[in-house]
Length: 215
Image (cartoon, rainbow, N blue to C red; front, side, top):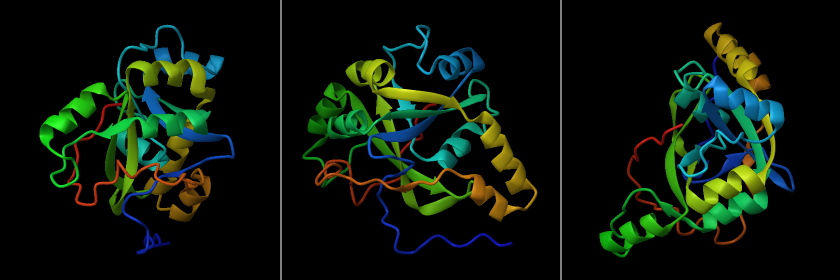
């Protein structure tokens, strides 16, 4: 069956995620030496480097695009990380856009200072459909460093699940042409209920194509 076309009224910049009243689910992919212990223990192990930047993605399909359905080297274990909405929103409030936008930022020097000082950064990359084709609206990528990275691992994380089998099941259905079946397996990602003003400093209406973040 032909895949339905995305709604034309979907805003270009909006967070869509699997969420509850208290939590939001984000995705990452790691080598098994990191991902499997994290899923087994429900938290990131001591070997997970808390002093480096880590990128989290609320979009399951964008994670599939980035990790090649969990097959790229170093990204063989796909994790669904449930974190507190309080922590997620703290990161967004303290984030800076990862690229400079003329007319949105006062000047490059101000943006560079904000980027250097911010514990989080945001990129908006084209969302993906189950065939991993780019859609006309964007998906949030949230990079965490310093305080944000440490709090993510040690305070905000509620649960960690290995969803690599799900990634492979969806991939196999897509490759077999069963798009309806693939859609039924996908996590339900609804618009995130943003508090007023949460993303005002992160929605550059003239944003150009940003570089892809790392895993």
